Image 1 (cartoon, rainbow over the protein chains, first blue to last red):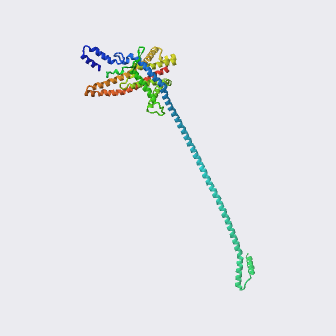
Image 2 (tube, each protein chain N blue to C red):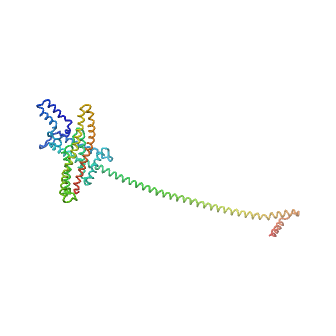
Image 3 (cartoon, chains in turn green, red):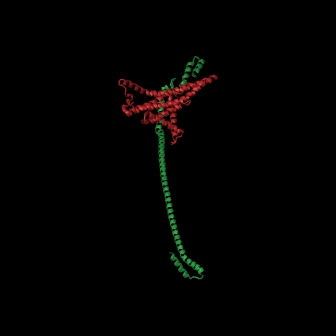
Amino acid sequence: MFVTPSFAQEATEDAATSEPEALHTETGVDDHGATAEGSFPPFDSSTFASQILWLAITFGLFYLFMQKVVVPRIGSILENRRDRIASDFDEADRLKTEADEAIAAYEQELAEAKTKANQIAQKARDDAKAEADIERTQVESDLAAKLSQAEARIAEIKAQALGEVDTIAEDTTAAIVEQLIGEPVSKSTASSAVKAAAAGEK
Amino acid sequence: MAQDPIHQFHISQLVPIEIGGLDFSFTNSSLFMVATAAVAGGFLYMTTANRGLVPGRMQSVSEMSYEFVANMLRDGAGSQGMRFFPLVFSLFMFVLVANLIGMFPYFFTVTSHIIVTFMLAMLVIGTVVVYGFMKHGLGFLKLFVPQGVPGVLMPLVIAIEVISFLSRPISLSVRLFANMLAGHITLKVFAGFVTSLGALGALGVGGAILPLIMTVALTGLEFLVAFLQAYVFAVLTCMYLNDALHPGH
């Protein structure tokens, strides 16, 4: 687009000699480097040899670099990550199992402790009851002993009292007789009289 | 010349080398091939240098491209195809990086030359043919004989299969080459409109907005094409390698 106006300008400047010159400029512009005149660059076969050679060199080296270095490296990175993730999952599984086991053990222990606590409580109750029973029987026996003691004492007092009744009766008899006859009565007379009266009553 | 849309494809000698009458000069194309290999290799090498168990951002990019190609190959050619992984991965990365480097202004697009894409395609087809005959011997020719075809149609079908096989390197190379070439020419033409309209004064600058929007949109599209063509090239490589591994349809 730029060539054409310049060509026109030159053509007006010098009509006689411009045509070959202008053509020369035109081809000079297009002929950048060693390409053939005016041909479409991608179809210019004169550059093919160079392109093929340099493509073979660069792509060949690139391929070797990929094959020897980059592909194994990225492959190992991805492999490592996969392994790591898998092992982490395994670890998590293992920990979960452990936790489950711990929970089961805890629950079992809890149940055992509960049973044990019940047993202890039951034993304490039984012991307390047995002790109370013993104490009660002891108290009861004590009471019975005291009761019998008291009864014995009562009987003794009663007997004593009954024994004294004769003496009182003799004294009373002597006193009454003395009042009645106005003369003292001997103790033995009174006593035999009381005894006779008592025998007569019987 | 600045607006010549073809100029960007010119090959200029940087270091003239001539061996046996053939021109093996180190050219701008060679320079960008070296750059492509260096950038792709350097990126993959350096981002994975830490071998991080938890990847960083850049390492993720390398790993993603690795797994992307690995999945592509496994889907396309089965787990047996993984022996070709370095080849497919190299092809994908090389084409992708060459395409992307070509998106920089003033940079040369290696894949916009048919001879480059054709050589890469021939590498693929050559691998398929050599490996196919190595592994299956003459059984590889079963590739051209589909099962369950009536005997009458057989010669016709075989002819079609052979032609389709022979056209593979051409379609594979032309697809990539034509996409890159056409994309860059279109981009250049629309960008050229912007400058030539802008030179016409105020009205022209106003009118240049339209091609400018177009250029921006096309740039986005070209990035997509750059990736897509690398992907297509790699996917087709996988499919062709599948034929070498399992020639019986």
